[in-house]
Length: 255
Image (tube, rainbow, N blue to C red):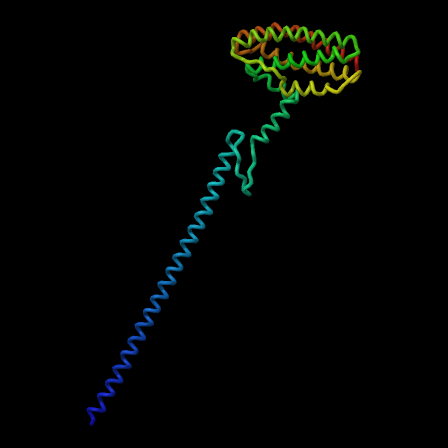
């Protein structure tokens, strides 16, 4: 009887032991699983954070580098600005250049470094100006001195253009058929003028045009790159100085 009573107790004890062991194992597995999941989540977040940080750093560095390079490149490159907007350098340069080109004082500042081909093209443009404006003076002016001066401009600068072609052709320089901005701006100011206002503005323009001519030809008479250009400039200077003096005298009479 005692033996039979002991057996059930052993069975109950064994069951309790197995239950405790299973519970412990499940708890360990759950803890391990939770730990693994937590570790995986942490790793994924760290990786994502790292990728995001790396992308931001890389993007910033690239943008800065690109902006710096673009800023030092030739006009026309779109430079990235910090805010992400773009600025077209060529547009700003072109606007500034055009404004500068139409300003006689700014234009004269370029004479000291002007290359021979540019000099020849500028001289041709000046001839076009003085011929066109001379024709306008003959047609529109009522002042005898102004009309006479205008006809002289047509005659002298037509001849000067022919001489200029003989210098430019051997050098492979193609002379312009239209005026440069600085000369065109001077001609445009006369288009709608008549009477005394025309005479005053025409003589003012001729005084300025020949002031520029004399300054430019003086530079080339002393330091052209080619002997033919230097000879041409030296030969033309006396006529240009005479025109400038006459323009100044007539301008004082019509004012």
